[in-house]
Each structure stands twice: as C-alpha cells, then as structure tokens.
Amino acid sequence: MNASTGLLLIRVVVGLTLAAHGYNKFFGGGRIPGTARWFDSMGMRPNGRVHAILAASTELGAGLLFAAGLLTPLAAAGFVGLMVVAVYTVHLSNGFFIVKSGWEYNLLLAVVPVGVAVIGPGRYSLDHAFGLTFGPWPAFVLSAVLGVVAGVALLVACYRPPAPEGSSETLAS
Image (cartoon, rainbow, N blue to C red; front, top):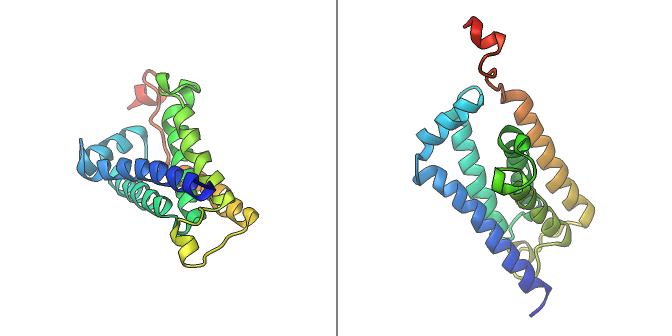
C-alpha cells in the first residue's frame, strides 16, 4: 500500500458519489423534470430545466473525471462550484450539521477534491498516465478559486429567490 492507493480510494469513492448524484438527476426519482421544478421553486433563472441539466451534467462529468484522476483540478473545480451553489441556495440557513440539512456534507464534497488536486491524483490516475502534472499552487487556483468564482458567478447571474411568504412582494401579487 502507498499514498497513490489512498488517493485512488478517495478519488473513486468521492467521484462516484457525485457522479451517482448526477445520474440520479437524469434517471432516478423525478428525473430532469422533477429536478427542474425544484430549481424553479428555489428561484433559479432563466428556468429550472437549464439548471437541472447543467447540475446533473456537472455532477456526472466532474465525478467521473475525479474518479479517473483526469484533469483533476478542473474536476475538483466542478465539485467546488456545485457545492458553493448548494450551500448558498439550500443549506446555509440550516446551520452546519447535515442532520438538520446543514452544509457539513457540502463542505466535505468541496474540500476533499481540492486537497486531492493540490496533492496530485497519484500514480493510479489518468493524469499520471498521460503525463499531466499541475503544481500545488496552480492546482489550488484551478480547483478552489475557479470553483468558487464559477459558483458565485452562477448565483449572481441566475439566483432570484422567491420572496418569503407574507412579505409585501407576495401580498402585492
């Protein structure tokens, strides 16, 4: 056993967990139409369908890339962007702990991929097989900074939460 084996285990479990989440948006439960209604209800514009497809595709794609260790810092950026949006739109007001739908789990799903990107995906990765190397600082910038910027940009451009019930905006409509 070595560090590359540990990195492989982390990448595969965390990556396939996120990929499964995206797969479920496409093929499980309410599928894209149900996910689109949920995004519409929380105020994602221009419409929930666009965000459902983008979220599911990013979860599936970033998860599979991360599991394979291919373009690891960019895959990690996908995790971070998704989690920034999830925390801000759904979990932040619920506190830290996941048992109350807080942002604890989202934090782990953002930080673990950044950590792996900074360390490097290890010998058992497609990045290693193809000779793709990123230094720790470029990997950090690509994964953490790009991910946060992407998530915040999406929120600024697309998030328009509905007015709380009983507010003057809902009473006027």
